[in-house]
Length: 197
Image 1: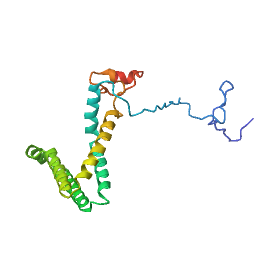
Image 2: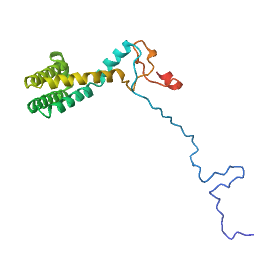
Image 3: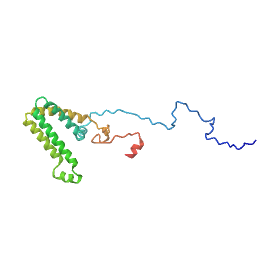
Image 4: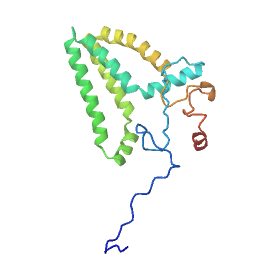
């Protein structure tokens, strides 16, 4: 028979073969395997096993959390001065503003002139002088009792926190090194991580 000028186009869909498994309508179309994520809760506090580990932890945490410890002391001192010692409170806020201005000024100075400045005047020396001046001002304005009671109450809290707090980037197993807790945290069962470290 003649086709009378009509041409059939080839089909763009492939015929379904009876050997292919049929997919369930509720299954995801992505056939890549899913990675299971396992969560573990880490408790950031524990008791050090040796005195050397406790001393190393105190020094490290005092350096790491020094801003938070300073703010904690400042807030407690501020709260104790609010009811009765308004003049002492004004001096405390003024010295805080002076200290913050000094630290902001250090950030504005170019890096090469900061190296020269650190050789002449150390930043820690200036901050220590500002703390001493603040303490003298509080003593002269008859707020010495508030200052010493605040320091006596806050210092043990800070020391207990710095002894018990384990930083997140450190290993919990203290037997791994002599000083304790100086080995980075890594998964021992993962060969990729143990080879790269």
